[in-house]
Image 1 (cartoon, one colour):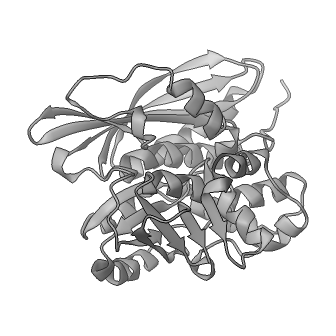
Image 2 (spheres, one colour; image 1 turned 90 degrees about the horizontal axis):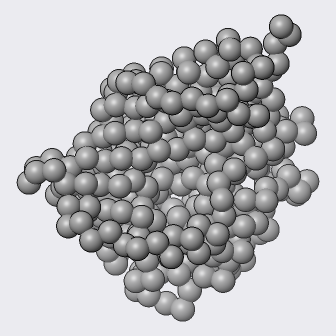
Image 3 (cartoon, helix red, strand yellow; image 1 turned 180 degrees about the vertical axis):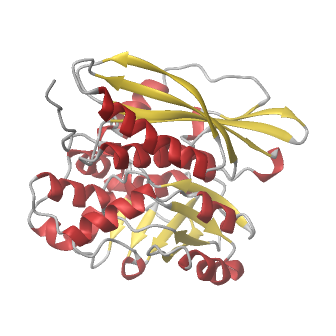
Length: 341
């Protein structure tokens, strides 16, 4: 049988997520669980569920899967796994086990699936976890991801909406991978930009999470399909305003040129439609706006931390080898949820 290569998927990675406005409309109709042991559910749009078992032990559960956004199956498996594992780290937890989620055409060469799962398994092992099984279905297109189980102390949870006024905001990976993948789809992305995007997407957030846990971190989330600004609005939770320094935002440099060529994603426009009225841009270029709305696949951690600790934490984060920076502050609530200046 002729091998069918995986090609870039138009809706691959986290660009394939349903829009935040659509999800909100559905989730608002569901009854809220009253179980007192469910410390974090879907009501706060957090990264994973946290369920308390004992006074000093809680479990963290998440799942994530999507179509390919790169052509190499092994790399796709790494990225999809890193993305799913990230939710555990965004909560401050440790990975224990993972289960494969597979959608794959039976007509396609099964060696491709083998390479995908090898890439995923490598990242689970790097996370210190164990791949314990999974579930697969015959589908007309490739999709892959993980269901992940982790643990955490109930007193050490890093929720996404527990910022404090006076905190500073740290971003641990560069933005722009959605824009780069869009440019790559039409063959116009440079090798350097693609390599930077792949390095970012395949890097576990484990290391950044372990660093920020050592400091007075008040809130944390990972930046994925809803983009930097939508996740930041969730963090403010209508209680504060984030003031973002656009000149401090780490991003893949070529993204500005790609935006000028209109290599944009539908997901970024959904993100803009969802939270655009909550954001005030001051002297901000259209390219930077698009970078801030851009959906990220396996993006970095967005951390709200005590200002006195931030510089020390940043020094350690920079040693991980990815562009990162202090990108803003958490301030008293103003008219807009986010101000970019």
